[in-house]
Image (tube, rainbow, N blue to C red):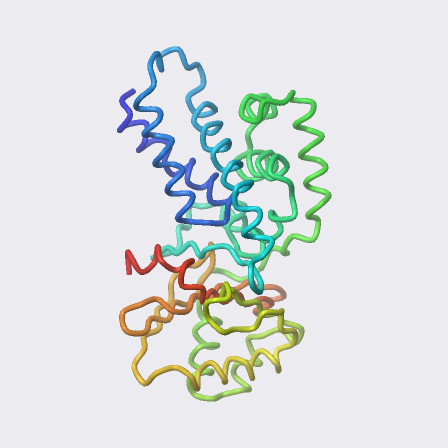
Length: 289
């Protein structure tokens, strides 16, 4: 199979793997690109027995190297760290709940609790349903060891988000009501879609002024958003798109994506709001929007 055909066949898988490991769209894209450049320059590729495992191993190794090289930067990060938002135009109904859940902002944050190897093993097993033998060939450990690593990782993130009973259409309606109520100054409308104990987190990366600690309770979150709304210029646009697997919001000012909001739903209401305002983590969107 030619490199171009391999790219078409495996790029979605490899990007999905790298993004879940790193939480960075741009780094994931760069790594997948580099992998195929390296592969194209290799000799004797016909001897590779399991192409999927081989390419996943290349992506995994580069992703782990990236995590380790960026460790210091993460340790001195200003405020809360959130993954780069992954934006899609429309919802893909063919995707399973596990695939959508595993790119939610809340899920990606939970993965950050794991070591690099634990994260890779957990993602390959939990999200992509790889058998332990194939995982072992990717991370260069025994299948028995991989099983133990997976079990340990799963215990570490038992508090993963509960599955929402809301349909994507209903979630979108709640998000739109949240935004329209905010624009109209309708506190009650916002309260109707927010859980009382909702949590808000924002990532400005020290480059944009925003809350550096989580904000708890619907009342405080609403006050915060009213404050943000007052600072918006007269002209801005709001687009409703799929952000990290669920309906979200993109705010554009002067043709530049400035705010991206992702939401988590629980008990048929919004339980978590994540706001990305770090311009470095929005660069990939300003290329395509």
